[in-house]
Amino acid sequence: MVMKQKIVIGLVLTLVSTLSASDSNFKHLESLYGKYFDKELPTVSQTKELVPTLFMFTSSSVPKLTVKNFFSRANKLGTTNYVVYRGLDNNVKRTLIYADKKERGVFAKIHPLMFRDLNIKQVPVTIYAVCPNREQFAYKSCKYLYRMDGDASLNEFFNRASDEDESLKNYRDILNGDI
Image 1 (cartoon, rainbow, N blue to C red):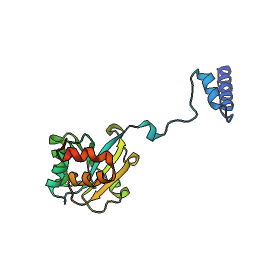
Image 2 (image 1 turned 45 degrees about the vertical axis):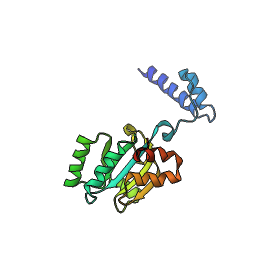
Image 3 (image 1 turned 90 degrees about the horizontal axis):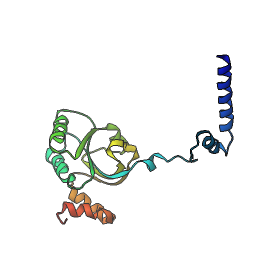
Image 4 (image 1 turned 120 degrees about the vertical axis):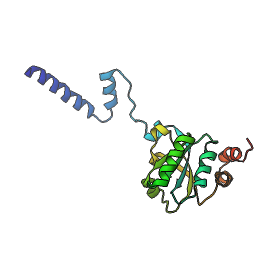
């Protein structure tokens, strides 16, 4: 038993001293495991597929029609869509139930940190971003591209955003019925 411990400790010390050599760490790993190892691992943003994402930040004070219009219009675009609330009350619960039963393409989140980090003081606010796909969603990994404050339709949002970014004209055309 003592002999096995000394061999294991000796192997670990050899491995540690081998790995502490500055430029040759990866070559030693290759010889130990018979595999090629890159010196640089991919960053989080390189490993996650980014998809077009719409956020509507809202509260129970926003008219229900505004939220329902967002649901129906956003589902036409093929984007990932979120309705985000700061907190929970009875009106929010009803909207969550509605979204779950009627609008399969819109996901509801209660996320006060997004309100804080995106400096949202008044609602509604609509934001277009590219984010990791829904299974890997982390709002800090999103790239937020366009924001519109106030009670404006998605048509108006994409009319204005497409003036600045040609790639968004397709969404504008879908909403305006041109496609």
